[in-house]
Image (cartoon, rainbow, N blue to C red; front, side, top):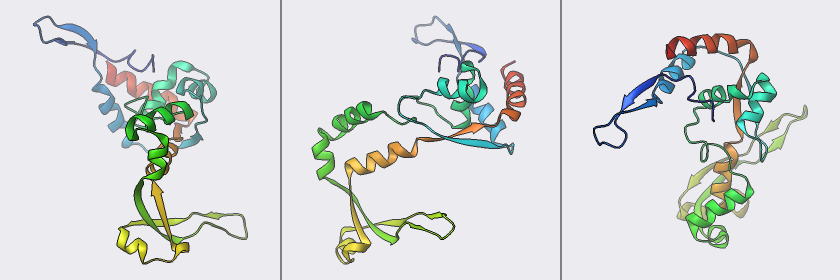
Length: 188
Protein backbone atom coordinates (compact mmCIF):
# COMPACT_ATOMS: atom_id res chain seq x y z
CA UNK A 1 0.00 0.00 0.00
CA UNK A 2 2.96 2.37 -0.22
CA UNK A 3 1.57 4.05 -3.34
CA UNK A 4 -2.01 4.42 -2.10
CA UNK A 5 -1.77 7.96 -0.74
CA UNK A 6 0.97 9.15 -3.12
CA UNK A 7 -1.39 11.20 -5.31
CA UNK A 8 -3.78 12.34 -2.59
CA UNK A 9 -3.95 16.10 -2.05
CA UNK A 10 -2.18 17.50 0.99
CA UNK A 11 -4.07 19.24 3.79
CA UNK A 12 -2.95 21.13 6.85
CA UNK A 13 -4.00 19.29 10.01
CA UNK A 14 -3.06 19.62 13.67
CA UNK A 15 -2.32 15.92 14.25
CA UNK A 16 -1.02 16.30 17.81
CA UNK A 17 -3.61 18.96 18.79
CA UNK A 18 -0.83 21.29 19.92
CA UNK A 19 -1.57 24.25 17.66
CA UNK A 20 1.14 23.26 15.16
CA UNK A 21 -0.45 22.01 11.93
CA UNK A 22 1.32 19.39 9.83
CA UNK A 23 0.95 18.80 6.11
CA UNK A 24 -0.60 15.35 5.62
CA UNK A 25 -2.18 13.45 2.75
CA UNK A 26 -5.98 13.68 2.78
CA UNK A 27 -7.31 10.11 3.23
CA UNK A 28 -10.94 11.24 2.82
CA UNK A 29 -10.52 11.60 -0.94
CA UNK A 30 -10.85 7.83 -1.06
CA UNK A 31 -14.57 8.09 -0.44
CA UNK A 32 -15.09 10.53 -3.29
CA UNK A 33 -13.30 8.15 -5.61
CA UNK A 34 -15.37 5.25 -4.30
CA UNK A 35 -18.58 7.15 -5.18
CA UNK A 36 -17.30 7.76 -8.70
CA UNK A 37 -16.56 4.06 -9.02
CA UNK A 38 -19.96 3.00 -7.67
CA UNK A 39 -21.75 5.14 -10.25
CA UNK A 40 -20.00 3.43 -13.15
CA UNK A 41 -20.74 0.03 -14.53
CA UNK A 42 -17.34 -1.54 -15.06
CA UNK A 43 -16.21 -5.05 -15.77
CA UNK A 44 -14.17 -6.87 -13.19
CA UNK A 45 -12.09 -9.98 -13.01
CA UNK A 46 -12.18 -11.98 -9.83
CA UNK A 47 -9.00 -13.23 -8.28
CA UNK A 48 -8.60 -15.74 -5.47
CA UNK A 49 -5.75 -14.51 -3.26
CA UNK A 50 -3.34 -17.28 -2.41
CA UNK A 51 -1.37 -17.30 0.81
CA UNK A 52 1.51 -14.86 0.60
CA UNK A 53 0.21 -12.91 -2.41
CA UNK A 54 0.34 -9.16 -1.89
CA UNK A 55 -1.81 -6.65 -3.73
CA UNK A 56 1.39 -5.29 -5.27
CA UNK A 57 1.99 -8.74 -6.75
CA UNK A 58 -1.59 -8.76 -8.09
CA UNK A 59 -1.18 -5.24 -9.54
CA UNK A 60 2.02 -6.37 -11.30
CA UNK A 61 0.27 -9.46 -12.62
CA UNK A 62 -2.86 -7.75 -13.98
CA UNK A 63 -1.67 -4.19 -14.68
CA UNK A 64 2.09 -4.76 -15.11
CA UNK A 65 2.65 -1.99 -12.54
CA UNK A 66 3.09 -2.56 -8.80
CA UNK A 67 2.25 1.08 -8.09
CA UNK A 68 -1.36 0.49 -9.15
CA UNK A 69 -2.07 -1.62 -6.07
CA UNK A 70 -4.08 1.31 -4.69
CA UNK A 71 -6.70 0.70 -7.41
CA UNK A 72 -7.28 -2.78 -6.00
CA UNK A 73 -7.65 -1.31 -2.52
CA UNK A 74 -10.28 1.16 -3.73
CA UNK A 75 -12.18 -1.28 -5.95
CA UNK A 76 -12.47 -3.73 -3.05
CA UNK A 77 -13.11 -1.05 -0.40
CA UNK A 78 -10.10 -2.22 1.61
CA UNK A 79 -9.43 0.21 4.44
CA UNK A 80 -7.28 -1.89 6.78
CA UNK A 81 -4.71 -3.90 4.80
CA UNK A 82 -4.18 -6.24 7.75
CA UNK A 83 -7.75 -7.24 8.61
CA UNK A 84 -9.55 -6.54 5.31
CA UNK A 85 -7.37 -9.06 3.48
CA UNK A 86 -7.06 -12.76 4.33
CA UNK A 87 -4.56 -13.62 7.01
CA UNK A 88 -1.99 -16.30 6.24
CA UNK A 89 -1.93 -19.42 8.42
CA UNK A 90 0.48 -18.08 11.05
CA UNK A 91 -1.26 -14.71 11.28
CA UNK A 92 -4.66 -16.42 11.44
CA UNK A 93 -3.51 -18.74 14.23
CA UNK A 94 -2.11 -15.78 16.18
CA UNK A 95 -5.37 -13.88 15.67
CA UNK A 96 -7.45 -16.83 16.92
CA UNK A 97 -5.18 -17.27 19.95
CA UNK A 98 -5.41 -13.57 20.82
CA UNK A 99 -9.21 -13.54 20.50
CA UNK A 100 -10.06 -16.91 22.09
CA UNK A 101 -6.96 -17.56 24.26
CA UNK A 102 -6.07 -20.73 22.34
CA UNK A 103 -6.85 -22.60 19.15
CA UNK A 104 -8.28 -25.46 21.24
CA UNK A 105 -10.67 -23.08 22.98
CA UNK A 106 -11.84 -21.70 19.64
CA UNK A 107 -12.32 -25.22 18.26
CA UNK A 108 -14.28 -26.39 21.31
CA UNK A 109 -16.60 -23.40 21.74
CA UNK A 110 -19.80 -23.12 19.70
CA UNK A 111 -20.17 -19.85 17.85
CA UNK A 112 -23.60 -20.66 16.43
CA UNK A 113 -25.83 -23.46 15.16
CA UNK A 114 -26.91 -23.96 11.55
CA UNK A 115 -29.75 -25.72 9.83
CA UNK A 116 -28.67 -27.17 6.49
CA UNK A 117 -31.40 -26.31 3.99
CA UNK A 118 -29.67 -27.77 0.93
CA UNK A 119 -26.48 -29.77 0.62
CA UNK A 120 -23.95 -28.96 -2.10
CA UNK A 121 -24.57 -30.86 -5.31
CA UNK A 122 -23.17 -31.09 -8.82
CA UNK A 123 -25.51 -30.97 -11.80
CA UNK A 124 -25.08 -33.16 -14.89
CA UNK A 125 -23.26 -30.33 -16.71
CA UNK A 126 -20.75 -29.86 -13.88
CA UNK A 127 -22.45 -26.80 -12.35
CA UNK A 128 -21.93 -26.74 -8.61
CA UNK A 129 -25.03 -25.87 -6.60
CA UNK A 130 -23.73 -24.48 -3.31
CA UNK A 131 -24.90 -25.55 0.10
CA UNK A 132 -27.49 -23.36 1.78
CA UNK A 133 -27.85 -23.04 5.53
CA UNK A 134 -29.37 -20.68 8.06
CA UNK A 135 -28.41 -19.83 11.62
CA UNK A 136 -30.82 -21.22 14.22
CA UNK A 137 -31.06 -21.19 18.00
CA UNK A 138 -29.99 -24.17 20.12
CA UNK A 139 -33.57 -25.38 20.70
CA UNK A 140 -34.29 -25.51 16.97
CA UNK A 141 -30.90 -27.13 16.39
CA UNK A 142 -31.65 -29.89 18.91
CA UNK A 143 -34.96 -30.65 17.15
CA UNK A 144 -33.31 -31.26 13.78
CA UNK A 145 -32.03 -34.54 12.38
CA UNK A 146 -28.24 -34.90 12.54
CA UNK A 147 -28.03 -34.65 8.73
CA UNK A 148 -29.87 -31.31 8.79
CA UNK A 149 -27.80 -29.50 11.41
CA UNK A 150 -24.29 -28.36 12.20
CA UNK A 151 -22.46 -26.75 15.10
CA UNK A 152 -20.06 -24.04 14.01
CA UNK A 153 -17.13 -23.46 16.33
CA UNK A 154 -15.50 -20.09 16.87
CA UNK A 155 -12.51 -21.37 14.91
CA UNK A 156 -14.66 -22.43 11.93
CA UNK A 157 -16.53 -19.12 12.01
CA UNK A 158 -13.28 -17.11 11.96
CA UNK A 159 -11.86 -19.36 9.24
CA UNK A 160 -14.94 -18.79 7.06
CA UNK A 161 -14.70 -15.03 7.58
CA UNK A 162 -11.01 -15.12 6.62
CA UNK A 163 -11.69 -17.21 3.50
CA UNK A 164 -14.40 -14.80 2.27
CA UNK A 165 -11.68 -12.17 1.95
CA UNK A 166 -9.74 -14.26 -0.57
CA UNK A 167 -11.93 -13.38 -3.55
CA UNK A 168 -11.19 -9.86 -4.74
CA UNK A 169 -12.30 -7.82 -7.73
CA UNK A 170 -9.78 -6.64 -10.30
CA UNK A 171 -10.81 -3.74 -12.52
CA UNK A 172 -10.50 -4.77 -16.17
CA UNK A 173 -7.44 -3.30 -17.92
CA UNK A 174 -9.61 -1.46 -20.45
CA UNK A 175 -10.98 0.74 -17.67
CA UNK A 176 -7.65 1.63 -16.01
CA UNK A 177 -6.93 4.76 -18.14
CA UNK A 178 -10.41 6.18 -17.44
CA UNK A 179 -10.09 5.30 -13.76
CA UNK A 180 -6.71 7.04 -13.53
CA UNK A 181 -8.05 10.12 -15.34
CA UNK A 182 -11.00 10.35 -12.96
CA UNK A 183 -8.71 9.88 -9.97
CA UNK A 184 -6.40 12.65 -11.21
CA UNK A 185 -9.34 15.02 -11.67
CA UNK A 186 -10.47 14.34 -8.10
CA UNK A 187 -6.95 14.73 -6.71
CA UNK A 188 -6.41 18.11 -8.40
